[in-house]
Image (cartoon, rainbow, N blue to C red):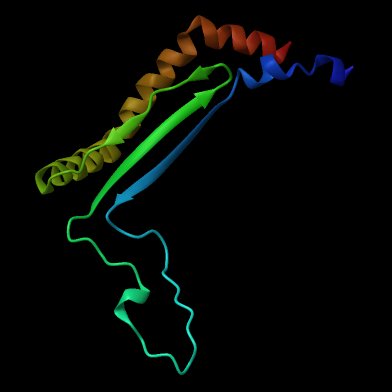
Length: 122
């Protein structure tokens, strides 16, 4: 019976997958290994040359069954933006209890919550 209820298309439609990555331009990802004989003299061209102008961007994407979510590319933050974001995060963390309480009160008063309670407790 459990197998009959398994419907992959409908089941996977309830999930989304996200990933993020850093893309390096002009730089290296991971260590650089060099193999040479002990008697062999070291040469600088054994390793890749570093570029003077490197860039790094962060990307994040999301997919689901039969659906592609947004693809985000973050630009570098200025020192001012980093300081403002840090201040905002500290402020949010200091005041999240009040906001969480308001959100919980609204959720518990919603019809969706009441229907969920009836369905789960029946």
